[in-house]
Every structure is written in structure tokens, then in C-alpha cells.
Amino acid sequence: KQEVTQIPAALSVPEGENLVLNCSFTDSAIYNLQWFRQDPGKGLTSLLLIQSSQREQTSGRLNASLDKSSGRSTLYIAASQPGDSATYLCAVRGNNAGNMLTFGGGTRLMVKP
Amino acid sequence: DADVTQTPRNRITKTGKRIMLECSQTKGHDRMYWYRQDPGLGLRLIYYSFDVKDINKGEISDGYSVSRQAQAKFSLSLESAIPNQTALYFCATSTVSGGSYNEQFFGPGTRLTVL
Image (cartoon, rainbow over the protein chains, first blue to last red):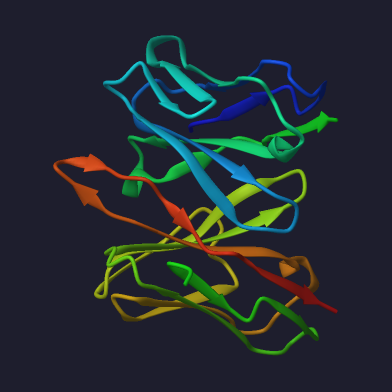
């Protein structure tokens, strides 16, 4: 059974810092990996999707990398801003029944002004 | 307008009541999903549907049922609600193109409290 772990569970940084969020998964037979942002009590907003054949994807200040063989992905946030404060979730789409998404527990990020 | 909508957004009910949560999407996606989110447990899949005639159980389907009334509508029912079904419920949609699984898009969520 696929397991997805996100470290750290919580992170607090001053505004302007570059930061890295980590995601690891136990089964490397995945189709893709998706990073989401969730604000408190709200829905999930898709940030980046990396297909299994890709190494990275970029959107603005966000860069996500994927190392499928080692079961790892990182989300890099450049020049963090208070508006980046949210919970960040990674999810892998695996080779399971229905090819469903398996979610990590999330990293709760606080960017202080 | 939001691409994936859920109604109601908040609901408080009592143990034993029947509850229906509704989801509609304008993205034209064929695949729809229901998840629940609990503190410390993350998101877990309840049911999923790949088209109107295809319904499948997810990880935690006991106590729930679904109906895919049309490609754009997917409802989740709690036949007899119990307190441990108190959670945040999300609907999501996705599609496949060119042989690749595309992004999954989520609705805003329904906060359900069962007293």
C-alpha cells in the first residue's frame, strides 16, 4: 500500500526566505505527483502536476521536482511572502485500483512579515 | 463562477438522520470523486466514478452511498449519520487525455457536523 509522508509537519519562516517542502512515497510505481495548497477551512488548490516522466515543473515562484526512483519530491518556494501561509499537500497517483491519489499529511507553512 | 461547486457548504445534523451532499462541475470532466478530511488523518477517498455508469468504492465507503445523476453531478449520501462522520467533505474531478492522468480539481468543501 502506498504511503506518502511530508516533512516537516509545520514550518515557520520570516518573509523573503527561500524554502523547501519535502514529500516522500513508498511505491515508486506512480503515474504522477500533484502539489496542492489548502487555506484553513477551504478547498484544495492545485499548484503543480509532475508526470512520472518529468523531473520538474515550475510556476512563478514555485518549483517542484520529482525523483521517482528514490520516492521523493520537493516543492521549492522562492522569496516567500505572508500570502504563502497555508498547508501544502502532496499526492501521488499510483498504480493501484482506479489509479487513485494518495495524500500526504501536509506541511503547515507560516510566513511571518 | 467556480468550476466545482458543493452544496451545502455547512451542515449540522443529528445522529440517525439521512444527509445528501451534492457536487456539480462545469469542467466537462468524466471522473468524479468524494473525499473526507479529518485532522491528523489527511484526505481519504470514499467513492469514485469514471462515468455515469461506473461507481467504485474507495478506501472508506462504509456508511456512505453515492449517485452519479449525470456527467456533471455526483452526490454523496449518509443513510444514517453518526458522530464519527463529522468531517470536511470534498468533491473532486479529473480527466485523462493523451494517455496521461491530468490534474485533479477540488470543490470548496462541505463541513458536516453530526451531533
